[in-house]
Amino acid sequence: MSSSMRADALHNPFFFSVHMMIGIMVPKIESDVLVLGSGGAGLRAAIEAEANNLSVVVVSKAPIGMNNATVVSAGGFRAAIEGLTPQDLFKDTIEVGKGINDTRLVEVFAKESGDRVLELKHFGVDMRIHQGGISVGDIPGLRGLALTKPLVNYARSHGIRFSENVIITKLLINESIISGAIGYDAQNDQPIIFSAKAVVLATGGAGALYKRTDCPLRTTGDGYSLAYKAGAKLQDMEFVQFHPFGLAEQNAPPYLVRGPIREKGHIINSLGEDIPKKHKITARPLGTKSRDLLSRAMMIEILEGKGIDGAVFLDATELFKRAGLQDEEEWFSTTHYVFFRDKLKAAERPLRIAPICHFCMGGVSIDEYCNTGVPGLYAAGEVVGGIHGANRHGGNALTDIIVFGARAGAAAAEYAKKRNKVLLPNEIETTERERYVTLREREASKKGNPREIMTRLRETMWLKVGILRDELKLQSALSDITNLKKAVPRLYATSGRMMIEALEVLMALEVAEMICRAALKRTESRGAHYRTDYPMMDNLWMKKIIISRNADGEMQLRA
View 1: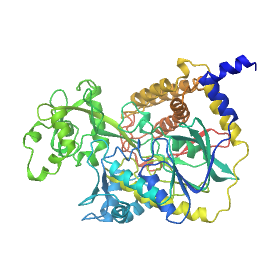
View 2: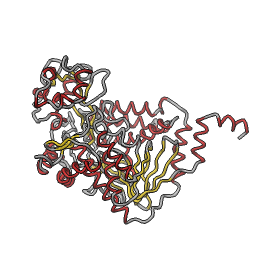
View 3: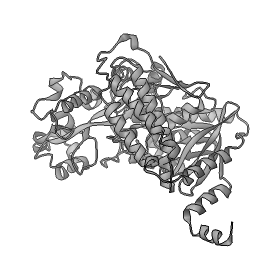
View 4: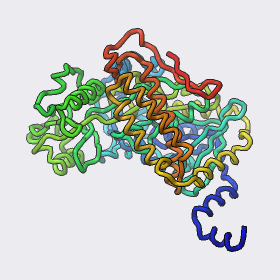
């Protein structure tokens, strides 16, 4: 290279970044236990592992404890306390899950729920205890921050290390045993390697694969893809929950409507017909026991032209007019109530609501100790399948992540104690570095823009793999995904943030295909999975659909 070319390169950020990436040493971070994800499951796992006197590192794609499903949750835990027995919790969970739950996991969940949620006080979590559970937080849309923030503070005070703004792209395996992970550090624009004796996968779900969702936009299913490529099995991927009470007002965020407003208001179509009554939906509370049925009914009304701009109505005007009644006093003092009263004028007019993608019941198959079947790899939280079956009961998600987060951390710690020093696979630095450099050096084109690809994928998933499914839609969705994969060789990235988006796309397309193929294979309707061409629940389908990778690297499904 001539001196003039070198001078030009120094003033060319793209050229300089690519060649710095080629020449630098890749950072390596060692730990006994590596936790992927800093939501409730990951933080609880990390705390439990560290309690075993082991070194722990938590990796997060976002700032630690932020931009995850825990933070934006309603802050409610359903647990066997204050009058709700483990037997009742078990029964309700199986009933709402339409009987396809993994009963071993549900037994653990129900039995340990009470002690685990009350234990959160020890970690600095302020809670309100009530019949059948606890609740935390009071910031609309960010209640879960009252859980993650204390857990982060507790973890930091106990020496747990954090690595944020890092997307993990591959789990490292040496001699069939997990030995760590490799990823991309967006802040420093370089690959990064983590070696560990055990890994806990707590990366959350894939709600952001859908156009309309209340999940953070970074929840695109990374963990499913990582586990699948590492040799783990997945199950129940067809079961994606849509919450019926998604706010659909113009210029308002897609908050979930909560409190008495959704149970005591009237859900009506544009003709004024009561939708739950019309569709014979009787299981109450609607927001916890009938999410699948009500979402389906609302979407049918919308598609039949009895909605407005893709939404129906929640009329709670009478409820707001009588604000202050004793049985509703607590809710009327919340910031959530004030938002609906003052910002949305809910006392003066019906609100527009529409279903919204909320939770993935499917995921990595585990045993009761969170073992994935891949030596050294454990999983907890929404990335796991089997606990909630075909549909999740409201309030069970946060309890799930605490119960199984603790179990995963303990099991990973026990495994790590028995291992010697980790040996990393050869040539991983070169392979991963070349991958990032290739994305940077590609010529920018509209067809290879990761944001454009993800937008098209979300549209496909919403329209064809959403609440109402049939064979033609699902086959069309698979065709769309195949076409989107053709853009992968042109995929490019020009910045740290865009690099994360490009790497997300590669995993998201794979996860979307899993959901489509599982939904196509299950020729019945059960829970959140509704096939208009197979509208009845079929006892012959009281079985799971297992997804794995065969010896040729191809996706295979078996029931």
